[in-house]
Length: 313
Ligand code: FAQ
Image (cartoon, rainbow, N blue to C red; front, side, top):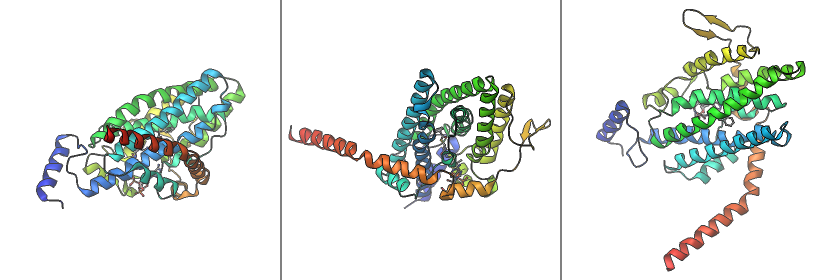
């Protein structure tokens, strides 16, 4: 039962900017909102390994292959930190994973698009990790301690990811006409889905007001999206790539790049499960889960044995 005193104490902690820790009292709705958002985030990191993993065997040289392997492994690590942080809210990781495998949990729309060329790997690092950094730098100040601390570490690693992506983009953009065309094509395909990562417009965002009131989100979907556009347009210009938006226009007064309307129909189709790769992604995760059953069994048997040893000694 929530008492008004507990609620007042919780709200005053949030107002002071103090962190809420796992054993602190929190409203049920704060807990359930965090479980929803953090588990979606953890699933995104795990599913997010698939589009790039597709290119590990086809990286153009050993240096690129090693870097990509390390990046994809980092994303697995991010998923694990965030699942652990979500478990501090009193839910088992296995339950969260079941929700993903049963198609009941969301994960970021961006990972339902295919990686058609090597240039996609550069553009994902630049745009997708770039968008994730904008969002997660804000979440590093989230009111829930375990989530905010996970974000601080993740952002450091994502910065490397963005740099390796932009380095690939820069190399291809300065390469042969075919390489330049390949990277432009990748930008054309990934630009709009990257903007969708920030979620619906503020007026349509059902969770934002509650999350902002509780200091989980510190900025709105639209303001983060605008910040991402503002920092990315000059980067595209620096390497002579075109952003596929005829409405893109600099506003001298506000200092913002005005951009065209996102295809929200496409966004909602993708988050409903009807994107280009949704079915393939879930099938890949189910198969990985089934193939890993023996590892989970072995780990459980080992843990049980350790426990028996401790209790009998
Ligand atoms: N995709 O009310 P809002 C990464 C859903 S990590 C799918 O505005 P909220 C690293 C939303 O869940 C990328 N669903 O929601 C990497 C809600 O549905 P629900 C992931 C979306 O929570 C790089 C409904 O729409 N990052 O990229 C999306 O206030 C490279 C209404 O929306 C995070 O998860 C979407 N794009 O704001 C990894 C960061 N947008 O649950 C590998 C943490 C919205 O009510 C390779 N999450 N929806 O049924 C967040 O910051 C927020 O949850 C938002 C959505 C901003 C994603």
